[in-house]
Image (cartoon, rainbow, N blue to C red; front, side, top):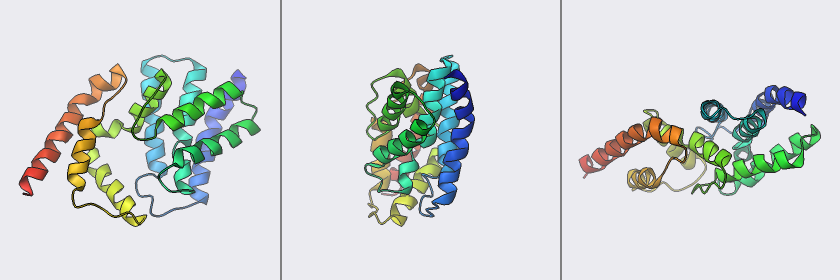
Length: 201
């Protein structure tokens, strides 16, 4: 199984890229392949910090790569289940054991908002998925998410900035690594949105 995991660790990103290329959805200006790559990169950054086992790293890599593939085939609500199904079909064909598939599925399902992770691996992928909340790029990704929802036919509230601010305030990082690295940046984003709202009154 060890060799299979090593091989699949290289094949999965290629396979997921092909899915996004084959099923182009132009309205996904945020939940696209670039987002998937960023989440995978950040997931492995956190995993390396904690020196996780090869199996745990594989679980996290697979979960991060597949976690938003369901966005290509379903509405935002419930896309995690579809993502898990795509992952399961692929990994069963490649002989991955059921307990690993279930762990990956659990990590994918844990990315559903609001985050309620039950394991350390689930905490890691949740933090990787919202890593941008603690970085300067959040101001850009927030606009991309708003535009994506508009393009997908969802009404955009005039209170968007207030909703974003509430989300930032209610969010928490689960790992000590992300708390130490990103909490200050998240507070700066909270302050930025607070000022924006005050200046718009």
